[in-house]
Length: 235
Length: 184
Image (cartoon, rainbow over all chains, first blue to last red):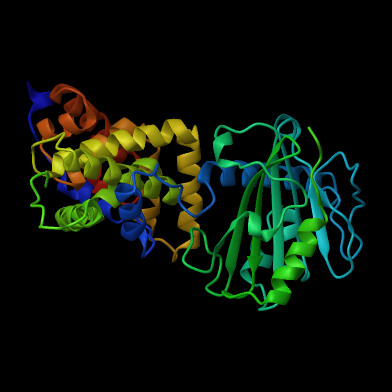
């Protein structure tokens, strides 16, 4: 039967091999051996889950587009005078603070039902971040003393076991630190603190980027102070 | 592996550590291919890393407990890994659209990709993941149809059918960059 005659398309195989494959972390096998030897459940990788990230990114981008068409900023984008947020805030937001800029990004109708996004930075927003809805340029160009805090919230998630119960305010110590070599690292000098948490009945993912691989105590304290201003609505 | 000799006075921990070293040495020759396979099936760095880790843990435990007698053959490793990829798809509730989206966007942050690479990335990831897996196993990693069928848990005829479909779709999608690839 012709269709079952064994053939190999070498040319096509060569073309597919050109699709770049990212490197694994240097400690991948060491981490895997620990899990295998100690009969632990396999761990999640350090980076942001791709599906989660792109769903949020796409949502924020869509919101930005809608806002731009409407002739405005994304939601309540403010510089040095952030949108007011209080303990009773009905949405995810950062309370005002001098020298911090913050953004609350409302999402389009369908996603609005399950997701909220807010982010803040102690440096001016860069490039087109206010219209793109994602702090890409700001994070990529972070100076050594720069900090960006990005928070996204979901009312329900597929993997609730990965969001440990925490109480507000969140702190850096609620998460884990990735100095370099992590998925999607925007620039060699930029480190990342990841915090997955279940707070006030909500599933929250916070990413804190620092402009250096070994942030100073002062920088970490500054980030913790901004985290303390993150208001997480109760579901 | 399961017959690794117990040294006098050796603790279980040290025996397991020695078994792991032996296991790691055995898989090292396939490590790059296995990772590339997981990444190209799943289309995400984290997902590929998690699937590969789960596969190694499963493979090591199977070998350590003597659950399998066969050596760590390449087709067997691909089979374990593919099952972990399927689990990863289910666990993360990813859709083919997520995969395509990430792969396309990730490509933009790399060095400017030549047209062919960019085009094949998109065309390849537009294939259903079982078809991608069949093309990868046979055309990229050199498994026979029988080995690929065993790895994916489908008959040889299904592999042939997926290959026909996948190859034709790829060649149709790429005439701009490789006109000689057109099948008709």
